[in-house]
Image (tube, rainbow, N blue to C red; front, side, top):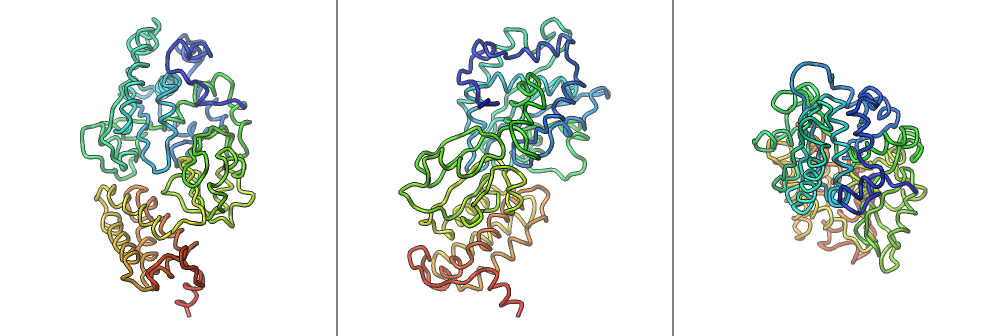
Length: 434
């Protein structure tokens, strides 16, 4: 199949140019290709943001008025902090020139003369690789002042973060770039109206921008045809957990989940799947009974009340204790809350403490319902989407695996190791209603 972002395994300029790299960019700066044509091609491709939200890239670019006076900025979000996700690291490490070309194309289309690529703090090797690629491109006259004698100037800067999860939220990232603590801003105003230093700003994910050059090269229709309706192109999926061969795979949107699992050699030790998290731990968990016929695309995920997210697919087999797994996740989210919003700052701590009480055998089944109630009260009550990122795992784990939580709370041990008869979340809700 035609790979989009992982088609090069050599980070050098020569290797990228050998497959046609920077030809689109050269056509653009020479005037052979216009910004308007590029924008319409991106819109036609139906490319959706690959960072998690899935917003239409062409529409986002269209929010920027390239001819309006004043400075404009582009930010590439390479702060890959979503647990279970390791896709952008491969682009940054093995194909940095394609990402750089995508950054340059986007910057030109939106009228930005400065672009920032903000990398996750732990990605020092990737940072160095991107810096080397930038130096190569600058020497070749492809970036910087008076690009290829066209009169066009675009500066690109690589920034290394400090390992914060919340900085992956676009407005928190802008705060960090400005030298402030990474805390999300209220919206509106949106970045396209008031972003970096109060100027119009576009923010896109690494995988999104790396897809741009080949889309323009081969056409929006080509890219759209790689996927399925409402989910165009390819997506990089990172599969981890209880599989024989964890790995990273760039596949067409709409690929059956069974095919993805086969590429990983199936579930380890011949066990059965218990549940899957399809897009990083902030997405709702999918129990095994909903996996039959499931495809990896936006519409299919909505039907099972979850999302593609960042593409971090985590497989859990039937030996998994869901209480322990959720507690582990909530420890992470409690640690990573920026603390700005009370529901998130305090709620994450309450949930973690209640889950720890269950694990210590200091609870009753009534506490499980309280955990669910607290999580529901956090959802939609915070400045950024961190509230949902934290609450969705909690509510979905409890709703799908209530018997495990109730059994652990009542008996002080996991249902996985003591399979007594439990009861469902719906039975719990109905009993409370009655």
